Amino acid sequence: MTLDVPAVPSPAARDVWSTISRPPLFLTTKPEYDFRAGVPDAGLFPFEIWQDHLARQFRDLPRERLTYEDPRGHAGLRTQIARRLELARGVQVRPDAVLVTGGSQQALDIAAKVLLRPGDRVAVENPGYPPPRQVFTALGARPVGVPVDEEGIVVEAIPPGCRLVYVTPAHQFPLGMPMSARRRAELIAWAGRHDAVIVEDDYDSDFRFTDDPLEPLYVLDPGRVIHLGSFSKVLLPALRLGFLLAPPALRIAMEKAKYFTDLFSPSVEQAALARFMADGELTVHVRKAQAEYRARRKALIWLVRRDFADVLTLLPASAGLHVTATAPAGMWPLVRAARRAGVWLYSLGDFTEPRDSLHGLLLGYGAVPSDRVQTGLGRLRELM
Ligand SMILES: Cc1ncc(COP(=O)(O)O)c(C=O)c1O
Image (cartoon, rainbow, N blue to C red; front, top):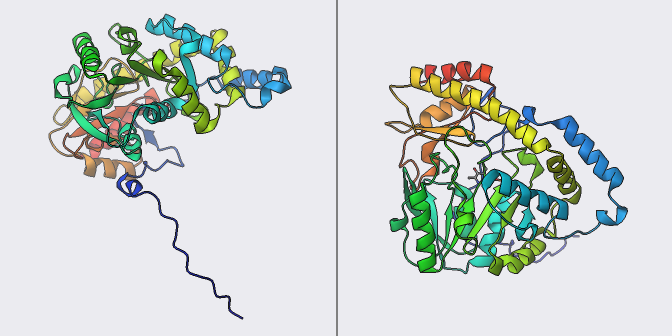
């Protein structure tokens, strides 16, 4: 007997998803030489201390705290984040202003959901970090790439009518320079005139190597700037913990958006992180990691200047986990060959719109130990 099953149309995703590029493949094995930008060294993470904190939280947290929790985040963690922002970044906020999120990616998604209507124009940096563009597109907004020069986003090139501007002022992604004080003031004034909101992605400013850091944009206008912070670079991406500071007028909507996104972030990890910070472990870790990254960065810059001067020109950068170098021609064939040879890195052209409109390489020093920088770069040189 054959069953007569009526033909049912397959479910269809909204058209927009066919226009959004796939996220990069996740590497299942560690590359021999890992020069990827933005990847911290998991080997520097204090696993034993962290395990103790986690175990202590599981043992000590009252059982009633292991159910549904405050969507805004663990109260102790919000206090610690506010304290650290004041000490490390000169931002004075009350814990009430902090919303704990699943990394800064979720913070961005929440901000976009709260603010954007279909058809809204949104300014993003070009070159820039691709995911914000995709998040805005998925919501039906229209991202517009705005050029970046040595001072940061070119404010006068932001088209009128943009409701939101996404920027990386502490360490422009991918070029690396901080936004100048003059440009910061211009951007804040622009946002005020156009009634726009600025999303400030502060993803990796914990590691600084040269100049004194400028205050975040949030300090200049807490009523108009949404500040996104992350524990991914300073600790581990696997923790999936970050936060946002919302202007008071947006706070309640942001809290609701967080609630309807995932109810709340994992509470045991939040409690462990609060303790880790309160005990000064984060400060100790940043100090150690910063010294290690400083040595790798120094070795990398020295070798690039010595061995690649005919091809690569390093751009100035004072923070973060990568440096960027420009090149006279497209780097994609080299990057592909390098990956096949076990050297993982990104081409600058992957972060421009249109693709490959700038040539160069991003050289990360987060995940490649100092004693492997030279051999890794040596292998890259052989492929040129
Ligand atoms: C500019 C920028 N923002 C945000 C992120 C993601 O941060 P999180 O892991 O906190 O979501 C990254 C990760 O590489 C990044 O480069």
